[in-house]
Length: 232
Image (cartoon, rainbow, N blue to C red; front, side, top):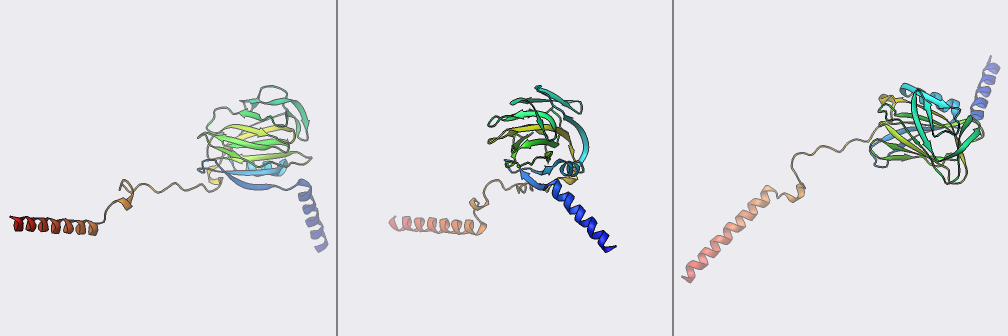
């Protein structure tokens, strides 16, 4: 019995090693107001984890040809900067040249807050959110298998820029959905509301200071009056 359990454990570890590492992390927007969930790695593992954080699934597009737009879940996505159609470990996709970013413009959907991209090569990905802020990954180092990067955002995702400064890249899959708010990373706390004082409290004199100032002015006026009386 023990030998059988050990064999199952070794087999499971071997499968995990073959699948490749999964990186789970968070990314903070450029204005520091929002935190996004973020994973990258072998598609099978990454995709399942990402799907579990969605409130609803929107759709998927794959098997891309060299077209300036594509459908995913009945929604139209526009893409620029690609060089043509290429084969990738995940299937046919858009090819991107070194130093030329591919830019995907999303449909205007407030519910588009979850995103998965099937990618090849060593790209970096930048999202633009509905408040104009951006979120950027570091260079992603994918292997020879099918790999993905995923995001869950508290705000609508407007566009995606895929850069590959040192080598070409390929986009072979795009899936989207609506992130479950209860499964988003902890968000920055807003600043405390104004107490109504209006202005810097350090610039407002204390009551004791006002008494001292008043007492000094009163003494000065009495001194001036006495001096005038002596001169007269």
